[in-house]
Length: 277
Image 1 (tube, rainbow, N blue to C red):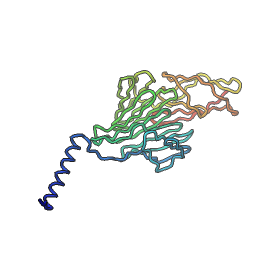
Image 2 (image 1 turned 120 degrees about the vertical axis):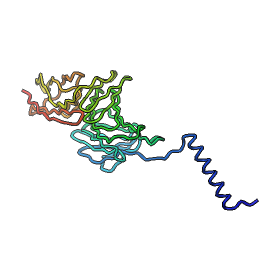
Image 3 (image 1 turned 135 degrees about the horizontal axis):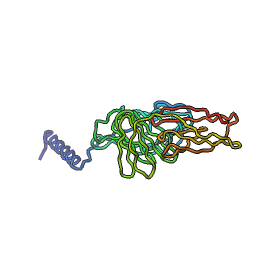
Image 4 (image 1 turned 30 degrees about the vertical axis):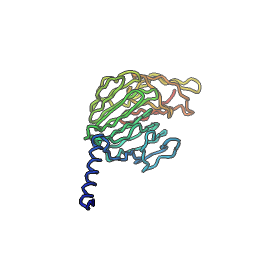
């Protein structure tokens, strides 16, 4: 029996319909969309790494795979862009930011998870209209998750994490508890503890010194800063306790002047020059 062209067409259409129905039934109908985070600007020593490959970061490089990392050196910075205009990330000096997840789900939701082990980043994001979309910053202390906002994260070497929200809302999560940090507020998360209750945004870069004393070729410095801030002395990031207190000893420079920088989670900086008596 012969089957004309109309019959062949009907058979082809039936085959296509069956294939599509089977795909939908099994939730297998997906469109692969490439995700990326692009380097838009670098200042100073900025490094890009993928696997065992390490090279200077330059404008136009795209981070696309889990583990891709941008690292900044002392006095250096970078600006990154999340694909399709999702937002921008400003990376401060002595900071490492790594891709943990970069996916597009079956419902079109874009999932962006970034790991900041140490340093400071500021994000400016547009509202995420798809409820399945999310952007998260993972630190040793917990997670800061957002759906559209302007906020900053500071991570000390000991993992203590400060979050400051300028606009919108950030959900800080640790130890199974979530605390919302709305615009105009900040909070602190200590490794092994739930996030602290939010307090009004300080953006306080004051450095309060209670002791500055030379001992041979070293100098002891005792003081306080806002606990959410980062403290850099003699080009080295220093740990501060949850109350903002620090007691450190660093080499005494020949000119007896110690440089210190205070950085807020939103990236505001204040430089100090401590004259040792």
